[in-house]
Structures are given as structure tokens and as C-alpha cells.
Image 1 (cartoon, rainbow, N blue to C red):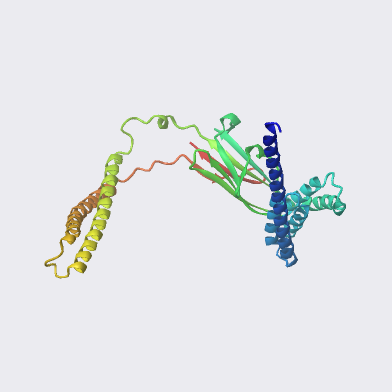
Image 2 (image 1 turned 60 degrees about the vertical axis):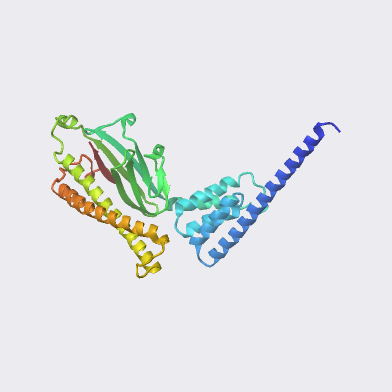
Length: 335
């Protein structure tokens, strides 16, 4: 036998083991999918399509080749009036059947085609448009502020802005969120069966007044420093009071330990000396921290209350647009 023979045998054994493991995994997945499919069929037979959809979806995720789960999912979603989801599943089923020669699927392609055509008029459609303006003029996309668009819990790719999207009938909230955080524009819309709606959210950037670009020295909030000192002092006071409370708890614990071990406090064992020392130290800390906390808290609160903040007018507003084109519109004013 050549030196390479044992290596070849090992590789062959590993390959066989891998194939067996893969086959077992596929068999397990198919078995799990069949169990989920059976559960979905049982739920559907009992008129519970809402839970059946969950079972069929899990079965399809575990075993995508299970076309029965896909068909039942499409049928259940149609019963729940989720027409866009159902139509999408029927079209997926039609694509999956391309080239299939299995006799049990002989009529399914035609069924899928007919269902997709039947559902098309019932599908709701939503178009989202975001317009950026500067001084009432369009802003090039390269200069447009960064933002994210969300439809309910779904993040919409910006490439789909202006595209008619098929959606199930129901309520939707469209949000535009600035990448820098802070301001958020939103608009609610309810889609009826077969209804098409458009939501337009507008970014409007106003040029800042010259004075706002560089404020003269000394025109800021004159109370800012005093107010900051007040908050710091108040924080020290609160922390001291917390420390006093902890020290008091330690002192009370030490007192309880001494009382339990030596009720009369006479001729006590030397082993209690560390507990007594701990109690004395805790007592001293309670007195010092308590006094410091009361004084600092009072002084800090006085500084904060006597140093009101000046509230400059915010440059970000959000208001509904009036007299816009058909559909829904909102405007986001940025400084």
C-alpha cells in the first residue's frame, strides 16, 4: 500500500460522513416542515388562518422546497385580506413550478396565474416621495440631507422613492428620519382595497440669517456658567446624601451586631472590636456626609433656580402642507 492510501481512505471517510450528515439534516428539516405544515392545515381547518399563516411561514423557511406550504400560505393570506402578500406568494409559487414535471402540481401553475390576476385589483398601492427644497428651489440629490424612510417597521430603500409599492390594505405610518437625529417628519395613511395613495414629505432648507452665522462675543446665555456650577454643586450634594444613607445603614448593622453579641455592652469579647470600629467610622461619615449633602444640595438648588436658561427659538419645525398636489404632504423646515 502506498503512503497516500491511508490519507485517501481518511478523505473518503470524511466525505461519506459529510454526505450522511447533510442527508440527515435535510431529512430533519423536511420532517420538521411536514409537522409544521400539518399544524397549519389543522389550524386552517378550524378557521384560524391567522395562526396558520405563522405555521406555514415557518414550514417554508425550514424547507423552501415545500410548495404545499407556499400555496396554503397564499390562500390563507387571501382569506385574511392580505391581498398584496397573497398575490406575491402566488407569483412565487408560479415561478417555483417552472420546469416541474410532478403530476400533483400539474394544475398549480394555472391556479397561481388565475389567483394573481384575481387579486391584482384588490391590492393597495402606496407611493412615497421626498422632496428637498432650498429657498423654494429643488436641491440636487447630491446636496440633499441624509435621511432614512420607514413605512411602519419596514425601512424603505431610497431607490424605491417615487415607485408605486404594492401593500396590503390597512394603516401605515411613513417616517422620514434625519441621519443627524433630532427631527422626524411623519404622515399617517390608511390604504383601502385597491386604493392608490401618495405620501409626499418635503425637506425645506432656509438660509440662516447673517447674524446667526457668527454671534458677537458676550451675547450668549449669561447664566450658563452660574447654572452649570449649580448643577455640579447639586450633584455633589445628592451624592453626599446617598453616601450618608449608606454609612447610616452600615452603622445600624454594626450596632445590631454588637447588641446581639454583647447586649449589656460590658465585658464584651475582643473579637467585636472591628465591628465597633466600623460602627464608629460609619457614624462619623454619616455626620460629615449628611451635613455636606444638606448644604451642597441647598446651594446647588438655589443656583439652578436663580439662573433661568434663555431659550432661543428653534430653527426646526414640522407642519402639514396646505394646497399640495393630490395625496398627503408634510414639510420639514431645517435651519
